[in-house]
Length: 167
Image (cartoon, rainbow, N blue to C red; front, side, top):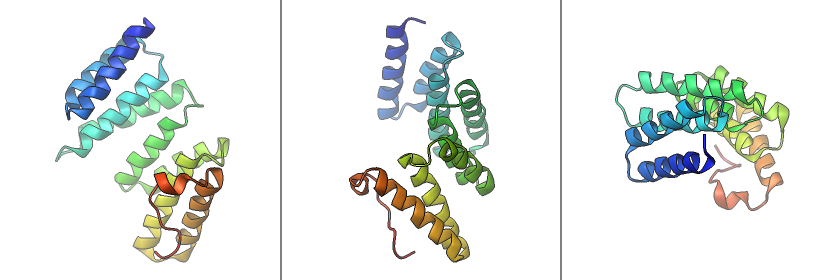
């Protein structure tokens, strides 16, 4: 696929998302994936766009299933693309599949333990588990992951709203 055409499809899909035209964005990204079936990043973008579609639907099962399948394809095509398993972790957590979510984000952190976005996802999962169970171990683990976010870039506290103390 020509790089300019690919860039145009991605750009137009982002513009459509901004205009709340998720189906149009999906159509653009499906064209991109069809024309570049081995492009893991294209599949990742399609997967997270299906996640956005699922969030807007009353019956989320079909869009969530498609998101999962496409994100798993992206992960298989490029195991170093940390965004795909991180997005899977967020999807699984939203579906109350906590063990699967933790497994996905731990896979990312096994490769790069200091990746701020992955630590943020796991910190939020742990904090949510603490709120649900009141088991302090979850809170302590969540705080550790939030500290890693701040250690990687002390300015991150301005980008990522979270609370270390309390709970």
